[in-house]
Length: 252
Image (cartoon, rainbow, N blue to C red; front, side, top):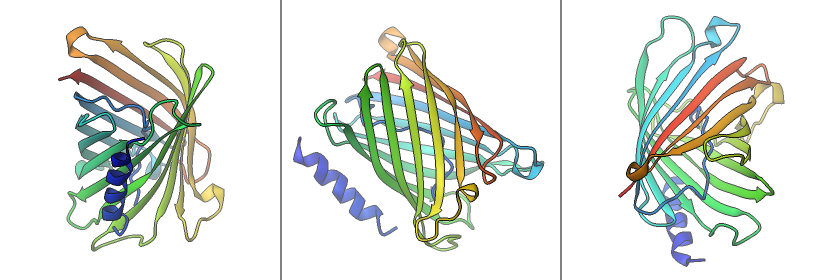
């Protein structure tokens, strides 16, 4: 394995570690890095709940990224969020610098490994900046691909609501059926601050079916999509959340 991958990832970790995870329904793979490829991406999520105060939480992103080489993919993302409840506006929330590192070649070890780092600069005057980082683990088992993201989030700067590290996780189990459509099950959880993790019912935990696929567009590359419905399994989660993703990959 090229040592430069580990050096670059460790250097970025050193920069970010001294610095609240965002609600982000997005599975990140260590194997989705294509050198010389431009990516235009949109993610969205809308929640539904019996309580109006917890319903209609909305999150949207617009991203642009580029495969610098075979193991580093940086992106710039603009976040838009809408607070739950009636009559809330949708506002630009943050500008985020994302970095995905692939640390192993596919099939080189027992699992494919990567690292993810992001720094979010708040666009809201009273809110703090944030960072999010952690390992990406993926393994093919038969016709399925199993992906796990384990992430630590921390607020930095003034006006911090929480001063500890927040632990979140995301899991996808995908059955690789066709290029245009593969069924999957996803789990998203947020355990809270690692120094005071509470009861499971007080943590965010969502699970549900997702469709994943893509279509070749000739010289334009390919268009990928993901869409699904996540059921809230705890009292701290919205009853349901619709999430989607569109990504245009253009070879340069």
